[in-house]
Length: 377
Image 1 (cartoon, rainbow, N blue to C red):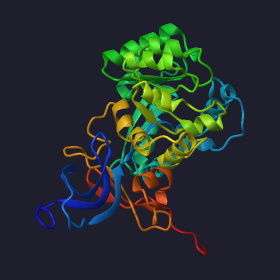
Image 2: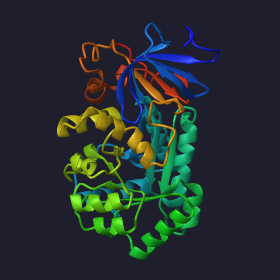
Image 3: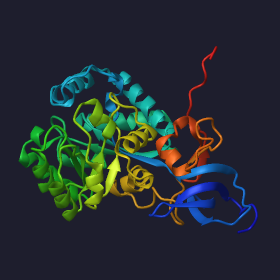
Image 4: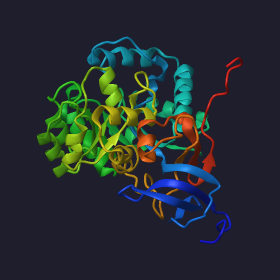
């Protein structure tokens, strides 16, 4: 390549993961018009931004509406998030402006964690979808990340109204709804070319077979699922999204991620309810790695490329020519990251948002979102 790159180009240099195999490479990445134009290992190419470079994260499962109720008391899952439970009551009682501002702050927080896309299961019917859209607009983050909304009908809403306003349908357990309602919603989503997804296998295994029978695009949780279930999901091209920290705090157990991967499933990752966990994928990667000791490449794929495929995106989540330039650059010289022997393992197990040197969205670099330091600190 020419020294310094061409007009309007941005060059990054350092160590990065390349392609679908997430190969460990050292060299440079050339970005132009929001796209990765070229990568290489040519010696002596100095980028304007340097460090450990990974695809920006994708949080495949959030509920950010409950940002107003962080850290509730421990209680059974059905009482916490089931119909008529704590979360539903809080959302019904919270004034509109309070709810909107809480979601707005969470969206800013999501960007500061290096996330380029999040998929939100949104309660509250059509009005719930609209308040989330308003919060996204008010956050000022529309030029820095994207969201996908998976809504569900509220009283008086029909499937067409939800699908017209959202990116798909996201339902709770099949135990919470009649079969006919779920079947009609699944069929409507497929007819409109949009996503249908639901939770299953979180409290017990009773709802897993019905969930698979509906042939959703993906199923969330699956802590109580078995290899038999994973084989059926693989045969039907159903993805899985795991939320390990959420399952741990609710006492639902650890999802069998290794068995999912061994079955050939596409496995993505999310952080679930903001009232229980921050939406930070660095924390999610660290927990998965240290609890299950999976290969760091597999974990990073779960939080990037796999989640992109599950959310029906094919131009993000990879570092490869022609992909959109949505990247996170981790500094190698912070007190936390200096001295790391295996850089990729360090990013997955150790890195935090404080180690981010730059976040690139559609090729445009941003500094990470960090609150100002308080006086006296």
